[in-house]
Length: 427
Image 1 (tube, rainbow, N blue to C red):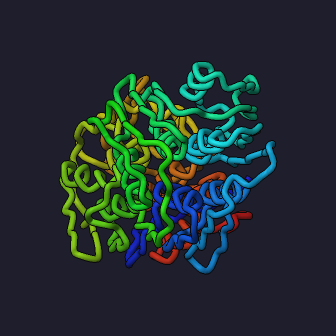
Image 2: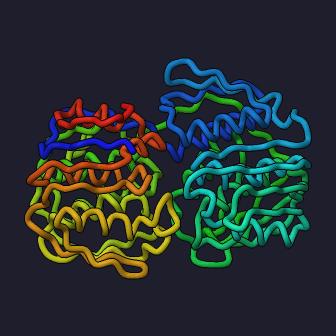
């Protein structure tokens, strides 16, 4: 097992926040569905992004990489043999976005996964398969999933409280079917921000969707994606780690974040201000000054990816913080509620884990110790930020989990003055 020792030291300097993984997935898919050549700029590759890119190539797209730009030719999409093995690695977005997309062409598909992805829920799709007469079989734990058949236009009823990724997958796929379709949301819809990202990219590539207050989406059939140049903006989910580090005493200027972004995790700025942070925004940069923060109640239903690093901040804030409506974190890359509670408590935090929430009582400082990433990129990064306020070295087991979304995280961390010793860790 690889591990890294992080020495307790505040960070200082400027950081260009990496491109949004959520928008990267969507940009690749939309470009591949376009009947022409699109350029997707500011694309920083990670294991998840590579999984989506490789499957789009399996489905017929041609992808060329030049620096941080992808040139994607979609003119041969769906020009493949009937049977395909599609490997999603550990990427939930890849799996859930591309199951319905592959099924826009009649064929036999086997979807493979690795790690926790094998058992992450796919029930909304199983229900669709049964209703629409699509044959499928799966292993007891979930993946591999074998699917045979073709989607047809019509009405699709989908839960909105498991993952918005199922809805996004249908929004990408249904417009290219011949007839009109409708998606009806049968429960409360969580993570609306991710649906907004999908609708915005679809619009950019020429696809029209009628959004009826997020309860129903009306989709005209036989639409065509238009090739274009697309720029992937910086990722608030990743920027959050350095913004929180600023609140905890570091001096970091973050650039590359769009002030008008539709990303749901942009709410990190509102949460930081509510906790007492001084957030400075200019046209180009965002900086959070070291702040005396206080506990508040945080609703995680629309920003689950922020919970690990917000738990770090709450652990070093005055008073009590409650993070509520967070049950979905149990079905992420790991059980994030349990993982962040267990590992931060090892470092001296005071966190109580409930079924769908955390209660965090602030402490003055954290201590050093050995912690585990649970093979989850966001747990690794949260623990590295916690190490800036520990009174001893923090040893993180399996830090290479960051390669899932942010391969250069530790390179950037050390560039900001962080110090650490590596044991078989591949930067």
